[in-house]
Image (cartoon, rainbow, N blue to C red):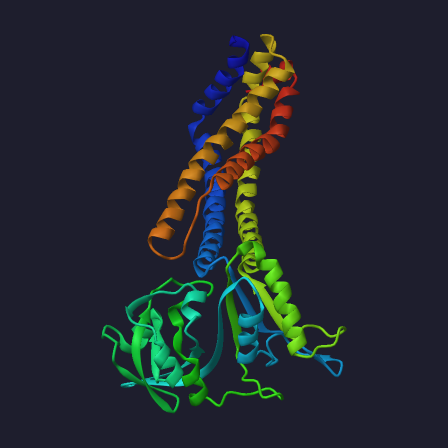
Length: 410
């Protein structure tokens, strides 16, 4: 047992004997590991926030938007065409199984005037099923009724950011505002879901029937009333792929597309969106980690420099140990353990520092951060690996010293 602990005790003595040098070595690793933990926690936090927002919208949500369309050999950009109609939404609701609700919507930028405040904002005309499809709740007031929808009532429901911008601390319920060429009455405020993907906090919702009266809603050549998008919920998530296939077939038939023509619409499920965003944020997290790893690499170079200086300063000590019977392997292991110990200590302290910085960033509300076990294990493992890698040459150099020449050293 003593044979195993002797290299450790010898390395420990070498570390504590040269406190300043050991402190500087550890400091470089602490900065590197702390930076890795902090930046990767920011990336992980952003990823978790986006996925949380998507899940809050409902995992069974499917959205249909206008897609690219090829005409005369020229392909338009996705979303540039106007191919979806209210009639498409009605056909989907009637003919496609496993659908619990369908919500077509039409958006337009309108001028809003409330008292002395004047701004342009995106207004969306929706039907009664919009709240159910997008998993929204009313925080204050109410959503418009079936009577409001059928009669095209001039009423509006606001997101929390819109409410705070236009009405500040005043209660907006019952208040009037000019929207384009009409006057609407605010009847409700949506519950906040925070900033992020698909957040309703900036939404201004009015009945789709009222939107048709307010804005000259364009029509297709066949007379269909064009909408900006169609959202729907699937009653059985296992049937999502089947539902997408059925909708694709139905819309291609309705839009009279030839077998060789591409779709003039795009269908996305929440699972697909979540997968795409997860890949994007994962790439961002790796990029942030790679940037932070540069400082860890610099710390590793510092470990090599300081260990080389240590070998130079302790040449006589190495000569005495060799004269007393220490083998090259013993010297090599001693210095390698010292390097590994210093970087391990720096890695552990760096994790604590990185976690504290991440916590401060999150608690101040600057951005969401998330420190996970894989980040910690990766950072500590890399720091120890760097210690072994950059400590190898100084250790090997120390083990190769000639004992007679080492004893002559002053």
